Amino acid sequence: MKLVSLTITGADTCGGLLDGINVPLEGRMLIPTCLTQYAWSARMALVNHNCCKWLRKYFTQYFANFHRRKNVVLQTMNFFFELEYLISDLYEKFSRVRISRKRDGTRKKKIKVEVLVDEDWEELNDPRRISELLPAKVIGYTSGDNETLSLPFFASRAGYADEVAKNAKNKDKKDKPIKDPRLMLIDYSTNLEVLVANLLLGSEDVKQRLIETQRLEKFRSFRCVVQLNHPAAPSGGVKLTQELQNYIGFMKKCSTCFEHNIKKNTYIFDFFIDESVHQAFSHYWPDGTLELYSCFHKLAMLNDLIIPKTSRKKFDTGIKDRRFASRLPEPVDEHKVFRFEKLEFLLTGKNKPVDYVSLSDGEHQLAQILGMIGMASGRNVLFLLDEPESHFNPRWRVEFIKMIRNFPTDVGSRASNTEAAQQECLLTTHSPFVPSDMQRENVLIFKKDLETTSIKVRLPEIQTYGSKFDAILAECFEIQPPISALPRDEIDNLLVKGSAEEIQTALSNLGDSTARMRLAARLAALQEGKE
Image 1 (cartoon, rainbow, N blue to C red):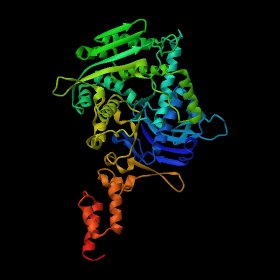
Image 2 (image 1 turned 120 degrees about the vertical axis):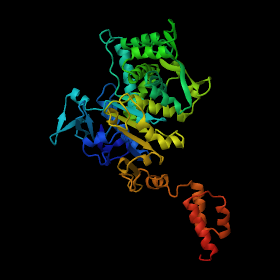
Image 3 (image 1 turned 180 degrees about the vertical axis):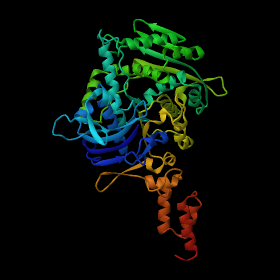
Image 4 (image 1 turned 30 degrees about the horizontal axis):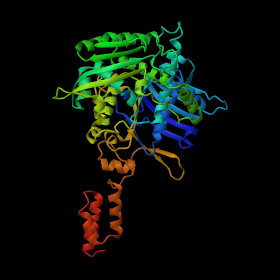
């Protein structure tokens, strides 16, 4: 899929900040035939004042509204928009879709879905047809507690847990699988689900790339804990649908050993990784990494059932009343229905185990993102990434776009003409590294007008692709010269008021920069008596 444009005509949650904003997302790729040739070059939004986080929030709000479960957010908020995008079918035929929500005088504003047919917009009312024209998956990533991005995913997660709790007690629904949520949030709490699924069922190339950047040699062992009758659980314990009971049975057969405490209804599964474990997981999850991740994630979503009813009610009320100012608390590990423990690896060149939690935040973040990129290889996936490189070292930041374009999937990399290339990605950044990998038309700069308080969106005036970081800092972030504030202010003051002796002393303590060169020129002029 490819996003075309987003127009926000009204958004009360932002205090009018985004009213009237138009975001051109299509760039120069105006015809569908160019989309597959363009491969997977992520559309990059440079954000001043974090405005694009709100835009991505609204994308996920809409998709949640047409999926299922907790749809309270859009129904209760004064948010009006028009979104256009292109989406492909199995035969790589593209449809142009327009989704809008406008003021129409009614209390519950209707969401209108249209498809372009012979140059005319045709409104759709068939839920099945609408479902076909939505992204297959909307995958969000945040490295921190970005509630603006994560809230709709939390609402979908809570809805799934509620649906399991109800269906498990209904004999007519207990045996029916619950569809996978289209919304997937990859954050620190889902980190291990992504990593373990990839290391168990990913290709050898995927496994190697996930661990080699962290100087790890081998995935050694891990533990899964499932506890259904913990004191923090609902009265009578957590009930499972047949689908989830099957998952428990599969893990029994895949584990190296397991323990079941009948009184507490707690399972502890230990896995010592060898070829037989890989083969067992491949047998019970034949569709591969994403299917296994879905199993782990469905069990993990039940952790919401441990959250007290008062907190869950407060969450629902908060969505309605405060819109984006509420989130569910995270249960402590010891109370969770499902959790991973004791992920151990062998360090390269050493026969010594190391626990995964001992790795750095940047190493965790890279494994998360690459694992997510590797397993979500189908067409029509929308990625919404909030500062995905925030914890990386400078070298990884420089190589980030190259890594995700070249990372292997089961259908090939996104750098070639594959299904995985027929995806869309929005990401935000506050660093100059990512834009240097982007063509100018794929970089958007958001800036708040201090006089009108409105948000302005523009393309860079320079070609960002291959540009040096100093130029990007100046154009996209208005940082010029590209040095920190203390030496910059000192140099500015010396340029205006400094004596030759003061400037000479300062120059000996300043590193190389264009600002230092200006100060040296000022010293030369003073010494020559020109000023």
